[in-house]
Length: 223
Ligand code: DC
Image 1 (cartoon, helix red, strand yellow):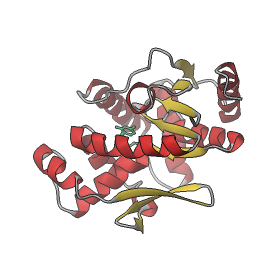
Image 2: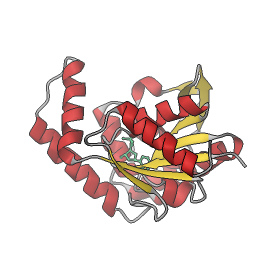
Image 3: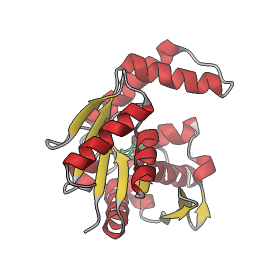
């Protein structure tokens, strides 16, 4: 059976950067499940489905043809066979994904896709419910988090670096709201799996966090 490393945690904890680096070090495939929820959101937007119309989301999500490919080591999300990676990071898609990912039918469909990927290859998979729902038998589980202040500062710096404008208080509030939604939804809420290792990255560099995860993987018999 292939090895799986599950990394869960709130938005802005550094999951994708850390998961990508860990996968690279180990020669594993990095699976970004958030991008799949975003591709589904894009599909719903393109089909004029309202985020809060749960029935329409349930009906329409069945028609979404989402698949994953790896090109030069990068995950490419295909929607109807077309690479949609460039369209997944907009505010509109983020907002839709935050709501449509609470739909049970959306989750069933995407969890199936995620499990299939992990059956075929060694993976580092990040998301909100990987250790608890998607891969409960993952050999190594990490719950990655950081304080709201640190996560807001990281997001702020990212926006400024890209030449944008941002207000740290607004970002903090949005992070708190998103945490609340992610942790309190009925379907697969964000929570630490009983056997996950808790890692607060507030005072750690990316390299330090990756080193810690490599150590934990070693302890779990992966290396
Ligand atoms: O990690 P992200 O920001 O790319 O995730 C996009 C949205 O999808 C976010 O609102 C949380 C949701 N999500 C989820 O519900 N379950 C996952 N395994 C991954 C993401």
